[in-house]
Length: 100
Length: 409
Image 1 (cartoon, one colour):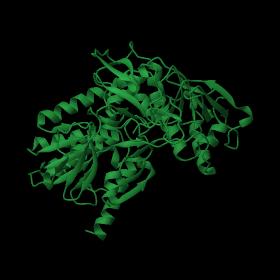
Image 2 (cartoon, helix red, strand yellow; image 1 turned 120 degrees about the vertical axis):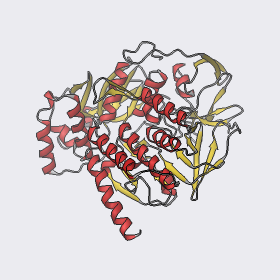
Image 3 (cartoon, chains in turn purple, yellow; image 1 turned 135 degrees about the horizontal axis):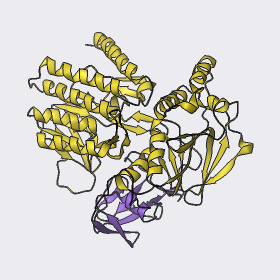
Image 4 (cartoon, one colour; image 1 turned 90 degrees about the vertical axis):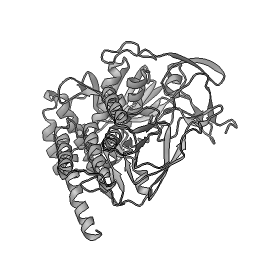
């Protein structure tokens, strides 16, 4: 899903960072949001609805709707769309399943 | 921590306001919940009125560098959760780092929080893979990740068409741009005829007039009726993207994620013809419901508001120096009306100068006048009015302000 060849946007050279999602080791690019890193890895489901368990993902992309909240170990609940992925981050889906 | 001024929002208006304050020796901090500065500039890519391409991230980098070199402090990952008169801005430490002030006391505040997208509620809209056009723009142009392989764009307005083009440039197969689900119809026959007359030459229109017209049609609530009566049944191509203005989205479907959309042609009565519904396979749906000012902070403070659809809805009532009805609370950028980045910068500059004056620093009348003229010019030069009539609405704001100021000086 990554765009590597764009007719107008300049190429970016970004360092790779390693993080995990639900225990799975993934590679992201420095500076990108958790949501973008997960989408690049094919992960669209960021949480499950607390009551119904229905899957939810990125919606507004600007931190306003709060649909994309995920759990980051040692930090807590963050918005995947406005939080940068960092080396060593452990990210989990939030909501259904007993996690805070 | 004590500062002279707090700016909430590090987009074009907030950065520009902070630069003005810092250049005149003011201690100013810009707070933004994003880790990076530039706001909605970061994803912007469209042809500019000066010719060539408007690359928003380059403008953002310049504004950020100017603010920093002037001496402004820029703090990201900082959500302002309360503004208390006097002033105190309380800040949420979003990453629990605990190494920054939890509050800033200041003599003046600039709220430059911008705008957000209005929701488009349609069955299936909570499925992962459904997102706003703004989210799709950030993924594509900032993070360089495709929102999907095959996408449908919903909503016919300048932002939706711009993002559809950006998706296509990034290699996403855009199956089309269609109307949102029906939300009722306001049939004003006179306006229908007037708009029909403009639509008559649709095929020969360049993208820009078409954009203005599309926005006008939707805002007047007539789009559906018009769509039923004019234009080729297969839609028109705008920037190579098929715009099906006689088709509406009915539903998004999929098992745990977006797998398909259900579309239907719009009949002569303005309603979708459900007997002719069809399914199209997609893995992403990008919704555009229009922009509205993001004005929670001024609202909580009891700031006076004025409603004007041409500005995107309810905006904080503000005077010629961008001060709201709450003394010391200034507003700038799209929170005062959706008018785009160049107008936002001009509003920020004016607000910054007014803050300096409020703080007791010397600002000559000629400087304020020059900033107002620059704002007028930015409005005149704006290539796309997101909502038609924004310029006139901004003028009407001045009249309303004078009425309020006269009643309650």
